[in-house]
Image (tube, rainbow, N blue to C red; front, top):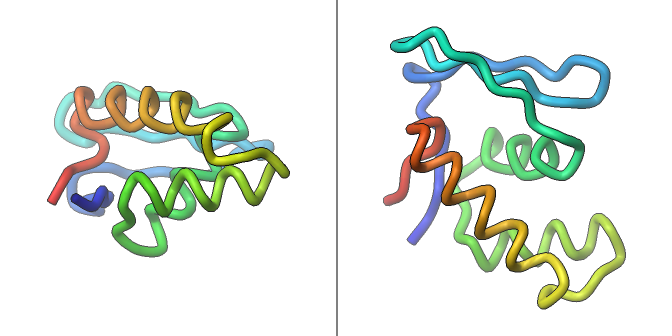
Length: 88
């Protein structure tokens, strides 16, 4: 399964190193911390699997995949629940 951002559904910008994401339907906005922004920027480039995201985040922060897997999974669950990211 891969995760992706539907550009018709959300608008976003990086401000002071953190992503600000707006759901265009509800007009709610969300702020992502630095790690969330890393994940968001990866998904903005292309659809990615959770495993690929875990590997990229682990590499970015010099951690093992096991150390970051839970945080990446939790963020993806939140983003999917809020309909900011879709699964395919």
